[in-house]
Length: 263
Ligand code: PGA
Image (cartoon, rainbow, N blue to C red; front, top):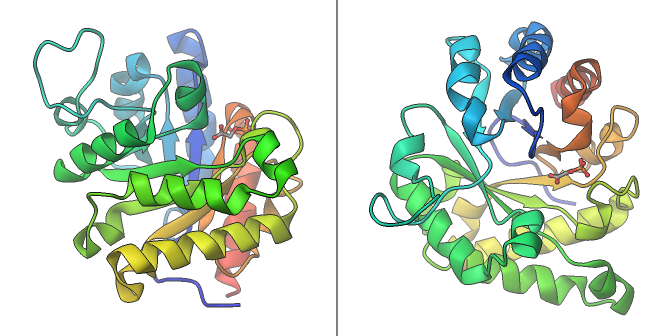
């Protein structure tokens, strides 16, 4: 079934457009920190709050070992791009950025080409990138998940090279599993992650591809995370809804630490 690449597992918390006030955001980060800090040598934990909360959250996280990321970025560094935030602006605060989340593809029309430009721009600023890919329910029902995911990976990594591998993560998130409570069957997740690893290998070389971490995302909860992190090719999880409840997210981090500690 293949072996896990070197590097720690990653548990990423995508807060999306939550919480809606800074006091709740700070409560959440403090709750998560009380557990995540103790696991920092076993699991890499990265929090992705809304842009507006990044500065305040970064102050709480300072020197804790828990990483900070943005949920999106633009592909230019500065200029006349109203409303956008560049990787150069994020770099002093963040180690990570998410690109190509399905909600951005769906609600703001983000294309594979934009995802590729964002990925390249973020990597050029030495940010680590979680690039999200995943098929819609229609594709899944029609049995075309592989084609859809392959095309997204190929397009999104168009400008990447072997040198980027250690800072590149691909999150496989079937769109029908996101926020729906219908988490993917682990066998389906495994097969798709294996395909992703193969395509990345064809693009940047098999050796470098082993350093690219691959996550599962889509209705991950404390009571189902184990079946994903036990998969041989799974390097962690991207968590949405369950990352907004400090105790539940902390449990996800602990389960991940336990599973990887036994490998
Ligand atoms: P969910 O979201 O865990 O709420 O399904 C995952 C994501 O969108 O990254």
